[in-house]
Image (cartoon, rainbow, N blue to C red; front, side, top):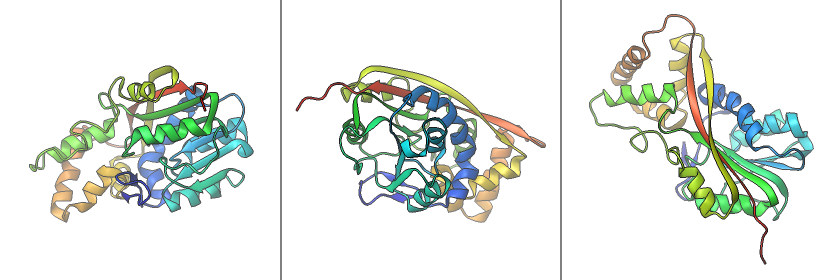
Length: 270
C-alpha cells in the first residue's frame, strides 16, 4: 500500500489482485451485489471509481452489459485484473480526484470501499458529479465505523493488546464511516435527494488459518501492520486474534456492515 503520486495523500494498493481477493474480496464481492441494487442506473453508462480487481464492475457488467461499464483505479495490477476479467469494459488507470472522462458521460458513478482512503473526498465527489449527467446517481460505500467489520475490529483490538497503544486507523474504524458523515459530504457537494443506508454482508472462512493467511498478504492497513511486525510479535498477534474470535474450530463466518450514500446530480449551470 502506497500513496498515489497523482493525488497526494490518497492510498494506492500495491498487493496483487489475488491477494486483495483473499483478504477483502470475499466481502467486497458480496457487498457489490447489494450496493449495486442501491446505486446502479437502470440503463446508460456506469463508472466504477476505484474498482480494485472489479467487484462492482462485475455487477455493472451483469446488469448493464460490458459496453456500458467503465472503471478506474490508480493501482496498475488492479486495472490489469479488471481488464482481464471484463475485456469489453472500458478500464483505465486513474485516480478518483482526476477522472479521465468528458462531462455528462455517465448515467451513474459509484465508489465502493474507496472514500476511506481518498485524501480529498470533496474533490473526488466533484469529479464524479462532473462526469455524471444531470439526474444521474453518484454513490459511495465504506465500512461502518460503529458496527464495522468483525474481522477488522477483532484484529485491531488484538493489535492494541500488544502494548504499544492503539494502532488502528482513525482510532475506531476508518474515515467517513460514522452516521451522516458520507451524507454530509454529498450534501456539501450539491447533490439532491441524498440518501444514506447500511448494508450487512457475511464472509465465510474454512478455518482460522485461511483468515490469518489472508491478513499476511499485507493488504490494507491491517495487513501492512501485521507484516511489519517481527516474527515473535506477529505470532503473539495471531494468538490474540484467535482468542478474540473464540478459537473457532473448522469453518466459521464473520459479518461486516457498510454505510452507503447516494445522491442525484442537479442541473448544471454554465
